[in-house]
Amino acid sequence: MLRAIAKKAEVNHTLISHHFGSKEALWKATAKLCFEIYSEHNFEKRRNMQDAEARTLVKVLLKDFIKFCANYPDIHHFLIQANQGDSERLDWFVENYLRTIYDEELDIIRRAQKLGLAPQGDSMHIRYLLLGAATSIYTFAPQFARLSGKDPF
Image (tube, rainbow, N blue to C red; front, side, top):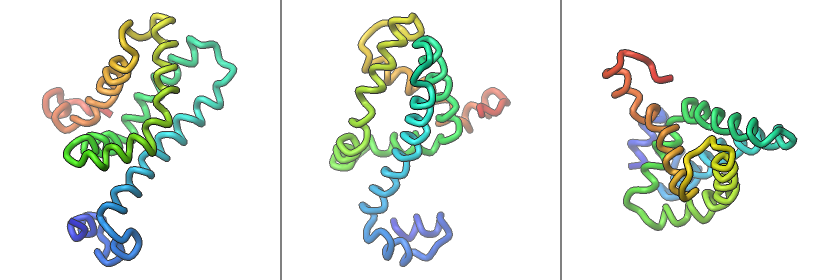
């Protein structure tokens, strides 16, 4: 597997082994990078809008999240892969990264619901509905392009 990754990255596989030590360590480094990209983008936007009116804040954050998904579709691919198979990896990722943003994301969804900008219902369900809606067009971009003749990006 490391050889295939090295080939795709166009580097010698010994470099990957030297820098990461194992496939598991490489996976964790990738997970960390994905989360850092997401949180840096997300938290910076929120910090810059601390004084914004709630309706404006929610609208901007939702729109910005969709743009983020378009700019970084591979992060969603990675998260889909993380949800399949290895439950230890998923447990590690949830506890080390996803849980840290969980409450904040649900708070934004609840605000959006109060403002009528998001459907009513369990905020966790709404989170995944929004996640799917924001990412699926980019996850299935080749299929979308073939069916519609349009570029989803």
